[in-house]
Length: 586
Image (tube, rainbow, N blue to C red; front, side):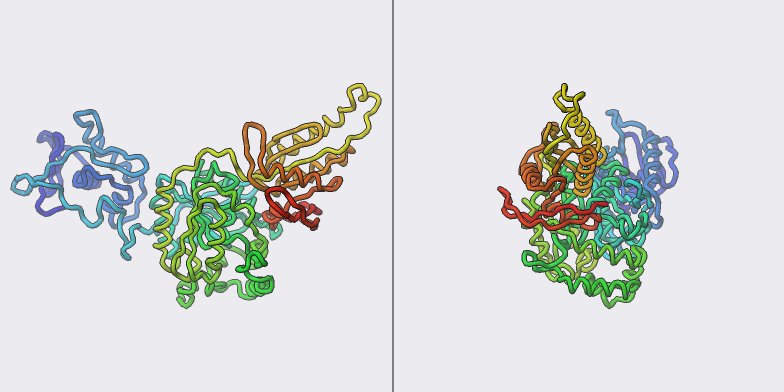
């Protein structure tokens, strides 16, 4: 406190800073020492909104305490003070921001002479969050948040929640992760702490990695399952809408989630990301098959050490402490075989055809000299997402918490805290299944009287159950055509195959076509280009065949579904599209 000040008067109270006494109309008011400290800090910061971190740092500067301690002391002070003359509280709660002392305060010096003007604040301050030793704006969280688990199908997904800001943020790390090892590196802890300073930050380990359930190599998560895991974690923490921050390989999944669930996605941020992992003539920046194979061999040979550090963190590649942490982080995040399988699976990712379906506010960040993923890849992604903002930043490090992390965090904070909630949309990314019924068995004499429609009705009833089983929505069920939409392409394919198998058992001839794209959803109907394309694909399918577009095939990498090339076809609004027949589904 300012050395000039002895008394603070407010209402009928006087707070004696020197004697640490609170009186009301001359009578002592009992307060515990910490409750007195709490009131004193509020009084000298009257009128200002005090964030919880500010109060914790100011009242308990040398200890780590939970927010509950603060709430208890605020409650004690409120009880001691009672209500103001106008019926309000002296300490007001400002939703999602903190607290504010709401009464006028008068200052007097040691001689009882009034001091004009507000008392200066200490560097801890009541306006900005506390500063750390390195001058950053956020207090680094040094005690890892509690690990909790969410159920996603039959898999347990480990997650953490830190911060209580006004916006939910789901952080999607690339490649492998380990929640506890995030916090063992000061740079990473600082990065996450700053995100948590303006959000409720939600972290998780994808299935098969980190602290989530380990799964067999044949069951490592597809993009579709990763979306399911995000939804499960959001449900577990009661989040109905969140901004997704996808790093590297986390970017394509986050983009797919934003397009599929725009009602759950308030904004999308992609850092050092890509649309396709392997090089081809239309995407000349990814590694070649030979380069990818060489990397896989290196993983098998060197896993356990700081694999890939030269590409991902060149500025720290020679730092022995960082190398040791990175090696341990990778070892704890995945087994050697799982790392190879994940990398092989990621090589099949291709979300180029769904980027235009992302309709939420989007920010794409990429460092100019990124040695892992070239800046052209980030630019490619941003150019294909309608209205996306692309920011190119200097630096060569791929990991966002290495190098100038503040440049990245400044862009993210400005983008997210200024972003408006996504409007109610009736256009979403979905996989459309169109099944065309060619014929049904000749009716028996008993069913002839009813027009021979009994078998068809029986089949349609089976179809309805299969669509429900695979979490689809039946948009249209007619005598010769069935249309359904799915939020996951692998489920759509498996549903189509199940319908085909039921049809065979009942002697019904059916063909199915699938395409992933934007759908216009109104009431119980679906329309738009994706439905039109799905219908055309179904017409091109052979009897009993499940035919899909390349868009569907590209985003079910690692699902175990196998395809056979059926050449190309020209569709209005899309041009030439390659088609694939499903030959095997798990």
